[in-house]
Length: 100
Length: 412
Image (cartoon, rainbow over all chains, first blue to last red; front, side, top):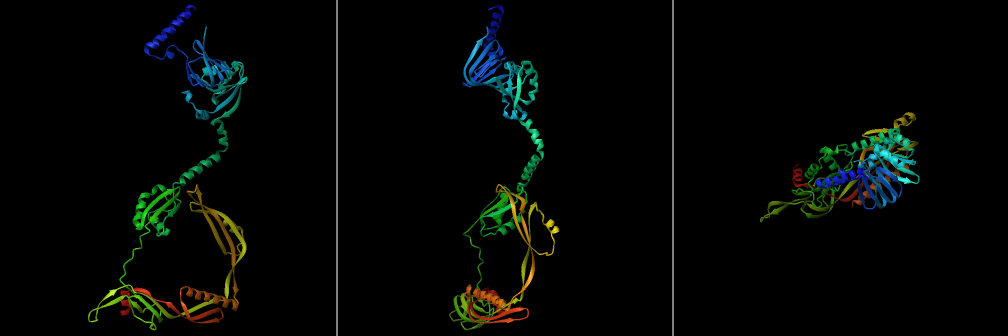
């Protein structure tokens, strides 16, 4: 871990502490990706950067400094716009892939 | 929120189903997103992807397609913008439909039929007269009728109406009444009546139930003579008349009286002969204006015979059983005829006259009139044949007249 990464990690931690202290939404303060899951068939993703990969069984979404992998069958992007996206299908797993 | 853009908004704006093929589809989607192009229902189909987008956004895709090497093919177009050319081609049809609906809306604001329900003692004509007095007629605006007020007026006008309801169903006005079945017509108490003879003759029998008989069997009477008096004298101890008690005279009186019968038949009689030139045309009547093709027929056909028998079948246009429209339709059939005069033979004339006379006798039998004598003569003359009969019959007689009127008649 170089100096830059350490600084960045510290900043995120500071942001989280700030959000906790003032009861602010953490996703806004640290610019984190927000994922809502409804049951096992729908996932709402907000504040993301884009899609990295899309197949019927796997959708990889790029967030800020992190990736999410939604696995399952018959995956469909119900809507895809600037603010959010909705993935539906038989979701079996939502995995977080930390960027090195 | 964009998420709230439902199918209706998509239909109004118009959308395309596009099949996309290429190696960098994810990059293409991301570029669309960054440039504010909404995509939905993105799904993988083997090597390609199918997605939906607004029709207006399709042209904006071109640089991104070129940049990412993606091939796009429109699979389906849907929504209002793609339907407008279809509408433009059939504009007259849609204008017609709109005009029809507008006309229907206009017409249903008025009353085009009236029906009376439940009236037994009060006739339809009386109710029609009442409605006309209240200014309710065909073609009146429904909004102008205050049903509650008219119901009240109806109850006031007809004393035997216990309940009434005036209401609309479609364009039909229903006037529903319930009458008091137990009530009897108000009878004015009579001041007493006499029975007087209807015709002159000889009384054959008299059975008095009420009143004082003024004649007995075998007496000759003239028309208007009092047969039974309703004034019953009351005698005092000295057998002098102290006063009169007034009753309605009641009696069965039989009288033997002559009846004259006369009938005549002309030798020649008219017969309608149809030429076979029948004309049948349909007609239409809208708002009281009559349209048919009969004048055109009259113009082109020869008019040798100007007499016609006209039969009109007329029906009112009804929508959904209740909406009566001011439109009538039907058929007019005109049968051309001419009158030909035929001549009866003496035997035919005699048979006809006797047949009529037998009918006359049969009617007497039906009324319970006994025929004692009959003397019938048939005379043939230049114009035809006549029958003269002198009958002597025994029949019931007597009609009720007020005592005052009878006394006045007697005085005169």
